[in-house]
Image (cartoon, rainbow, N blue to C red; front, side):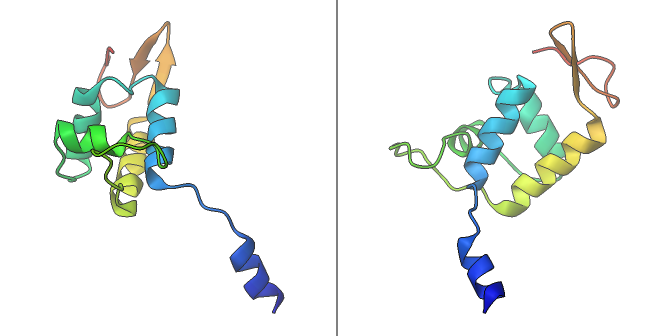
Length: 102
């Protein structure tokens, strides 16, 4: 019984919100080319409009909103770990590419 209560008490953050916050924290929110490249490396087919619709936070009224599939988010995050993205002197660096600029 306690287990069922724990399941119902859990709160989840929508995939779009997670994607929005990750890209903002890394400073790549506006760099659709880099985001598309990361998805390409993860073998996820995306377009600029799909990326834009996934960056819309849940609950914000917008006709272009599309829910981001959990699998796409998982693959995006996996690629971020592989790239080991860091910000140095205002520029994004990666262990995959020598320098990635915004």
